[in-house]
Amino acid sequence: TVSGANDCLQQMLPEDRKQPMGDEVTEIKTRMERLEKTDARLEFILDFNQRLGIFDKNVAELEGWLDEGRKRLDGIKNPTEVLSPEDRVTKTMEVQEDINKKSEFCAKQETEKGEIFPKQGEKVSSDAKKFIERLKKVRDELNKLDAEIKAECAKFSEDVKYFAEFQTGIKAFEPWMKKAEQRVIDGLAQPKSLVESCEVLGNAKNFQDEAEAKLKILEEAATSASKMTTHD
Image (cartoon, rainbow, N blue to C red; front, side, top):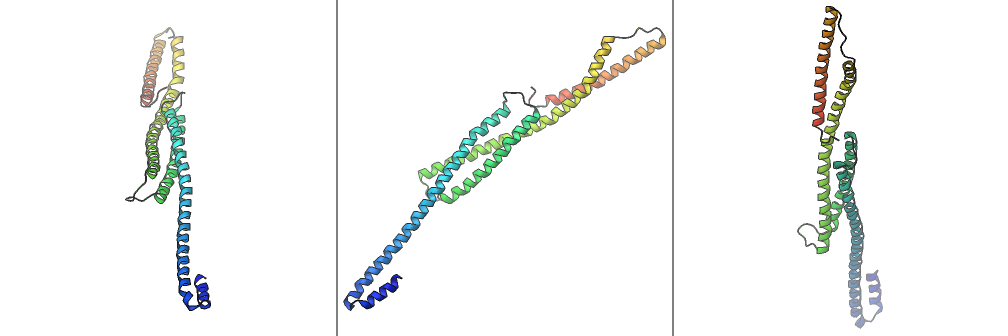
């Protein structure tokens, strides 16, 4: 050790030279301490630069995805092709899942930001502020997309229910309508007796009752359709 070597040298040297050597050893110790502090500082700077580089890359990745997420959401809200309610819900849920993943990834960057940048109340450099503002902007936009997609998903989920009610009504009405149209084409048979006249009258009244019942089903289907957010 340095102290052991110093003791040996002190014993070997004449009395008049022992003290100056002690001063030199003290100076060497001081220099060694400075070197250790410098090494520690350089290691900290190297680690910071590496983490900052990864942080910058991750934030840039999130910024790039935000444009994609916005386009996908706009494509659902204003589609260029006709989408069924089921397709809208499926696409909406896919975007929602991706937003959740990106939000979790953003949360990790927010944790990293707290570790590598100055804490609240400490002085923050202009460069650090730029990184912090970028991440804040990403978080704000993610939250905005999340709120929009949840609102759209709620609307389209209701559309699925109303669309199902509409289809049920149509399926109940359409087969009867085709038979009714044929009955109208065939017309009424000419009765030859009072009994036949009563039968024709009875069939006509039954047909009217059926028509009124089916009309009610059709009106209910139309009401369900009117509650949907899209009608194409």
